[in-house]
Length: 161
Image (tube, rainbow, N blue to C red):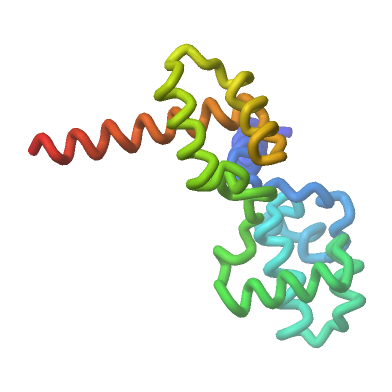
């Protein structure tokens, strides 16, 4: 792999766009022309949909040629239709926010800390489990507290102006 190919691969990895199925791409365009790069997930997804819509390929043929399942093809097609190229960028998996640490739980934490400032996150997690029957990792408690502290500092800074 040359230096520029290395740099491109690093960039694709950085942005979550390295195609994990690049070896499964069997389209002649990707084998014949340097412009096409099977490692580029965005390009592979786009070309897979384009082959069906513009070149008349069947969904089964395109999905197989690009290493995707038929249901995955339809998801890609829908995202492209709905959001354009940005829709083809993989989404972050898992929860997007601390869904267990609701306002009610955060109020409980603040009250507990009001009574004892020296409580550790592990102790708070245990208290949450006992009170709410909810399993929360101590690190999640630490992150939520740091976020609250940052919010308060920002709010206080705004009031000073």
